[in-house]
Structure formats: structure tokens, C-alpha cells
Image 1 (cartoon, rainbow, N blue to C red):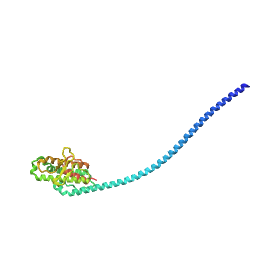
Image 2 (cartoon, helix red, strand yellow):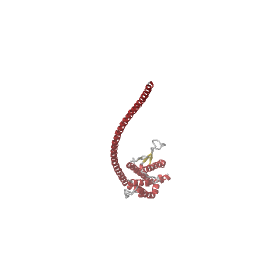
Image 3 (tube, one colour):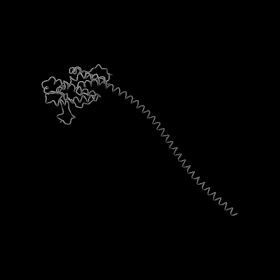
Image 4 (cartoon, rainbow, N blue to C red):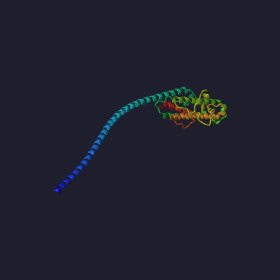
Length: 277
């Protein structure tokens, strides 16, 4: 009898132990379920926040797209306006260059008759074709220009006796300097070495503000020759004039393979300004 009770007590203790283990497992499962519920709640909150953010992004994207379309329309409008302004400026530039060229047609024709700018070229003709035509004119006039502008360098004693050639060269150089000033103003392009035209064509001068070797009082070089002792300064003045012409042509996208073809290069520049869009 006692052994039977002992067996039941042992069985009861075993069952109680199993119950405790199951209760412990149940508590662990409950804690795990609670933790999972909290995670699900956090995920749900994150999902809700993500959906809210996504809605905001969608609305912001829509707003940005609308703003981009507005900006594109404004950009197109301003582009058309800018194109119209550029065309108007180009037309006005060609008109001013034409007026300047017409104003000096007589002087250019008297200096070199074959160097007059051709006004019959249509507006739409390209600058390349004008350049090709001008090269033909330049070849015919280069020898004349070189004889008149540069033969004074070869024989310094002849400068005293050949007053007509000296005066003609001075007037011609002054005319070129004046034309370069007008063209640079019309094109809104700077001149590297400024000209002094206060005393007229025949007494024009060029100022070298760049070369460091010259003193502040010796930077003005005349484009005319009164005596042979001024030949070095005269040479430097003509060289500066050529540099101004070459620089102005370069700013307009024109190369200058021969710097001493003064009137040919000037006429080509005028023709380019008249023909380029």
C-alpha cells in the first residue's frame, strides 16, 4: 500500500514538473508573441509612415514636374526672346558696320580702289565664301599696301624727300586706326593697344600700355613720320596697329596668316561683319 502511494507521489511530482516546464515554455511563447506583436506594431507604424512619406514624395514629384514644365516653358520663351535679341543685335551690328563702311567708302576707294567692301553680297551668304572672295582682292592689293605702308621702312633717307608718300601713309594708318576703333565699339570688343585720334587722321598715335620696358612717358607711338630719327617708334606703332587688327579679327573667329596685308585684312573683317549672322 505504501509503495503504491509512493508511486503516485512520484508520478504526481513528475506531472507537476512537466506542468512547470510547460508553463515556462508557455511564458516564453507568450513573451515571444508579445515581442512579435510589438514588432508588427512597429512595422505597421513604419509602413504607415512610409506610405505617408511616399504620398508626400508623389505630391512633391507632381509639384516638381509641374514646376519643371513651367520652367521649360519659361526657358523656351526666354530662348526665343534671346534668339530674337541676338538676331536684332546681329542685324543692328551689320547695319552699323555697313553705315561705317559706306561713310568711309570714298576714303577707302581713294586709298585702294580694289579694296572696297562689296555690299551686294546677300545677308545669308556665309563668312567662308566672303573670306574666299576677299582673299582674291587681298592678293591684288597687298603689293600696293605694302609699297605704301612699308617701303618707308626700307629707306630712311627717302622719308625726308617723299613727303607725299609719308603723308599718304600717315592718313592711311590713321584711317585704319579710326575704323578699328569704330568696329571695336560696334562689336563691343576691346582694343589691346588704344589709339589717340585727337589730332586727326594724319597725326594719330597708338599707346603701348603692356610692354614693361617702356617708361610711363614713352608709351605713345606716332602713326606718322616727321623725321628719320623717329623710324623705330614709327615701326613699333605700325606693329601695334597690326596687333590690334589681328586681335580684333581673332575675337571674331578669323585667322590672320599675313599680318602685313593691312587693308586686305581690314576689308575681310568688314565683309565678315556684314555677312555673318
